[in-house]
Length: 204
Image: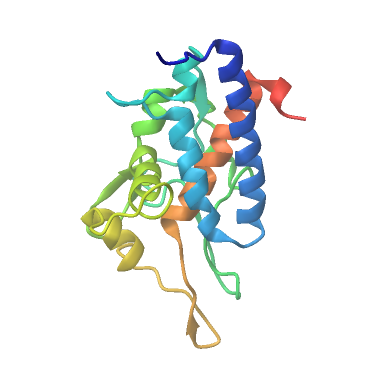
């Protein structure tokens, strides 16, 4: 016989997962970009439903909440969710959080399915990525919760072979870029803001 967790226990889990997110984004923002792999796992726990697993928000009957959408229109801006910094040792892709141009924040909140599945990145090979694509690739294949020997080709092109075709150089050395991981950081920002609206008691 198995033990069935109740809603109060799911609320405790939610509080813990929010704490994990807040702790990991601090580590990411302090320079440890690989922390985004743990962030992707937490996002999967919170949001992703399959035939064999249920997300925490679904257990709480709160999958109907809306999420902040800070992405630009991918048809005009192929890197719709992240930004670019030029001209310094910190050049490269960056997560704008709330510091991007006002146009980023005009949409406000959108339903989950729209937010999760909208295209937010298009590379030079016309591979298209949604938030779901990036979060699950990082979590399920690239070291978040699991490491696959064979990566999805589009994700491999993005993360191993610079399919965005942007090169950043400082003092003659190429700067490493992390478009997938930085996208996960911006996704976490959207999720944390959305959860803070719905569950303010877990944000002190």
